[in-house]
Image (cartoon, rainbow, N blue to C red; front, side):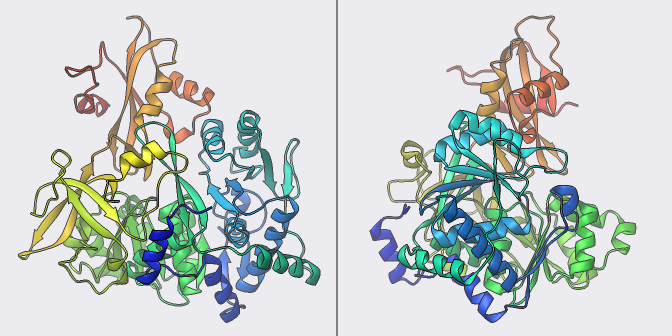
Length: 567
């Protein structure tokens, strides 16, 4: 499957921004150059997460696992352009399955572990996926049961990792590698070569229309955007990278996964964020680079006793983002431990801005600003500056904003940017301008520092999305379901600030009867019964007599925000 036009592919190749190199070519080169080097390290608590002992795989052993999974996919009848929905935590098998599918031209559509029947039905129906691959157990949940319930509606197969497949599912294990098997795989890939322009993944993001949006990205898309993280974080060959973000979207795939392939180092897996496990991995694995949410970094600095027990001496850099960074936090990590904290801003669609030491040496600037990459009037040394074009547009007039201090919508263009939402031509047309720029829905302004206009400052969001722990949630989806509640006449879902997750969800409801009592526990049970992922459940509820509306009947969300912030 290809989504880029021949004209666009030819243009990017002529400028050297795209090439014939595929993601799997990076991996194969690492196997040749560093066969005995440690490639992957599982979470030490793997047994609690999914069962079994943690894996530690060299590039050679990982290569054998990749080939084994590729042969299994062939045995199961998969062909190029078939879509496989994968719901796995950050364990070694997930990395191997990504690479195995990419070797065969099979498209991986990763699903977050938080997804339940409702979300799995949506993504599988939209992609017409051939199957979903998941695990029997994840902590205290049973993902295979949610998958079976979802697949009943969409008529797809359910594969379960390992050789112990519950009833109604198919066991998914790698084929044992033999010379005959390797020849069969080689013959297949030679007869069915994968292009760097082929779609490798379809990741998911939420939009204001309430349905998940599929973001197809080719090998070239991923390779182009990988420079942003690699450069901003200053990744070096052989680095050990600690990744706690789920390998389902830009944060982890465009960040640590692609940087790991570029560096031929070690990828240390962690999932979900558990501070004590995370710190134990820093002590045991001795990473040079780690990703951490701002809340984790702030909590570390606020706990001197815990910090005193943690050896951070090998860490050179920490990448953070998804919420505003505190300049004092950046300064403290540098002054106390010699660690640079990098501010990252990205999206599945192709936004890629990194503010590190090279882009903004001053912690005050780095916490607040991002470089104005992709501007013809500004020069930057970083390769990533040539891989994205950026501009800020007035949402009312459509004119470009070139002066400081005036917010506008960020629009992006270039080889990092996807081609359009999967099977959603109307939505794609609405979010791309006539001259081919993608409208991000993010509000930025140009910052004036030292008489130069070299930086952007993030202001907020043009679209009404709730971003909880970095995950985008469409309030319309929640409101549509709240409208089906037997005791609710109308409702609105709005965010309220949270120090850890950035935002949480508040349901503001109008009861059908004045004496009706709508409780948070009751609403959460209602959402659970609807098959919604727990991160979409309301975490606060307030009752009002009516929702505020404007002259044309639209709910005024800004009037609801003060209510949502009430305890």
